[in-house]
Amino acid sequence: MPKASSASNTEIRLQKLIADSGVCSRRKAEVLIAEGRVAVNGLVVVEMGTKVNPNLDVVSVDDKVIDLASIEKVYVLLNKPRAYVTTTMDPEGRKTVMDLVWGVPTRLYPVGRLDYLSEGLLLLTNDGDMANKIMHPRYEVTKVYEVKVFGHVNELLLEKIRKGVMTEDGLMKPKSVRMIEQLPNKTWLEFRLAEGKNREIRKICEAMDLTVDKLRRVAIEGLTIQGLPVGQFTFFSKRELLKALGMNEDGERLNNRPAFVSIKKTIDTRKATKMVGKTARPADDRRYQGFRKDKYYETVRSIKELDAIKKTEDAALMALPTRS
Image 1 (cartoon, rainbow, N blue to C red):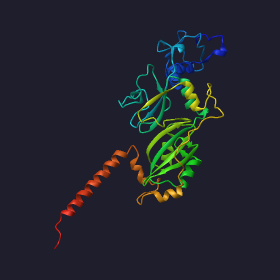
Image 2 (image 1 turned 90 degrees about the vertical axis):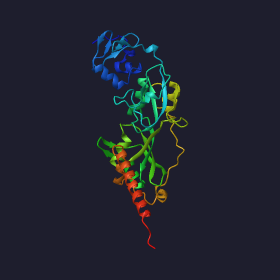
Image 3 (image 1 turned 180 degrees about the horizontal axis):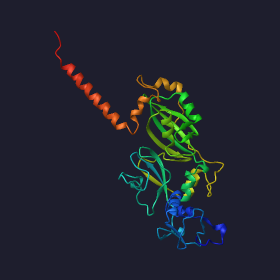
Image 4 (image 1 turned 120 degrees about the vertical axis):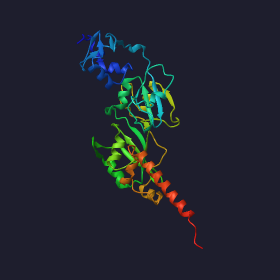
């Protein structure tokens, strides 16, 4: 192991230094260290607890020296469309969110994930430490999502979600969930999450037999995509970002932390029942599961085929001669 600096009060963990440099996230940095791709003062380091002094120690990743002083931190807010992968590259050749961000002279990384069919607010940055403050549950950063599900939702179902739902990955409980719009055959819900586990909302909905039609993230604390068109992005300074997130420079929560206030009022589930179409079914009706993403196109194709057959039969009946 390389000799550590004597100035222990300025030492930081190796993976944090790599993340702060914008090379990758802190979690990915740990993978690079384990793979033997990181060196300190010319010696390869594989120990995860290694600390370094950014002012004295020379750190390199894949033989490229990291110079923290020369790296300008960049913060981009993107309104992600559907059908884009939240990654820097995709082995399947699909479009990634990086295809939407242009004119940035440094390499950026997405902060967290929105899956392929999800849309909305996505941060991209080369500041690994800031990314960690947004993603780590310890900082309790609230993320707000609007979710459209098939069918109509009653108060009993909402209460079950609020109490927490047992999924294949354990208990998942949102900070809050409410109805914000009732359509004839679909319902818009607003979820607020603190932990932001992988695919948390979709897993909650699946466990409750709900089928998601659309999912978009609209805010992270006081940061919102309101006014930002789908597929477009804008830049933030670190000071602006910290203010919107209600944090100080150390990521500590401020007393007057801003919160996203939606213009959409809560819909009374009892009144919403009167708004649904005559053919609408409860949201947990398992017949809606044919519209889940793994079956969606097959289901739509079957519906179109049945409609075509019905139209053909109707046309044939109309063509029959009438009796005089």
